[in-house]
Amino acid sequence: MTHKIALLVCLLAPLAAMAADAAPAPQRQRELVHLVRQECGFCHGLRLTGGLGSPLTAAAMKDKPVETMIAVILYGIPGTAMPPWQPFVSEAEATWIVTKLQEGFPQ
Image 1: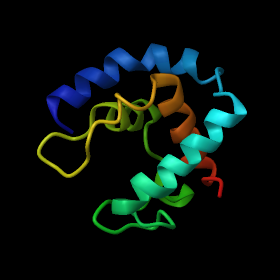
Image 2 (image 1 turned 60 degrees about the vertical axis):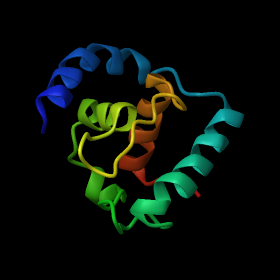
Image 3 (image 1 turned 90 degrees about the horizontal axis):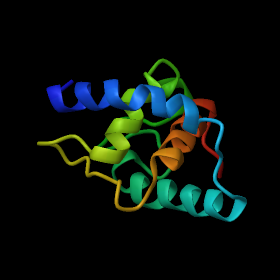
Image 4 (image 1 turned 120 degrees about the horizontal axis):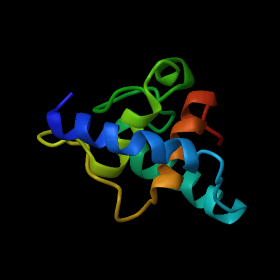
């Protein structure tokens, strides 16, 4: 983990706990499912089983620290193909995405 991501994880941890209770509205949930399936699926596979990017299945995600995954979604991973999605998703939405990935992402 890069130092920037480690710092972001420390900063996001308390916020992630608060945001976990705030699920996006149903319409936004559908938009986020579409975003993950299409945009993330481009690298992580349309079934999220991996490709250029690692798998995002429930089995692959279950032990990943939530705060780290939120930071990765929001800020990307410098020097890799993983872009920052912060212009398109809020922290609460990133938290919802991580939670759903760990549970088994909806269709």
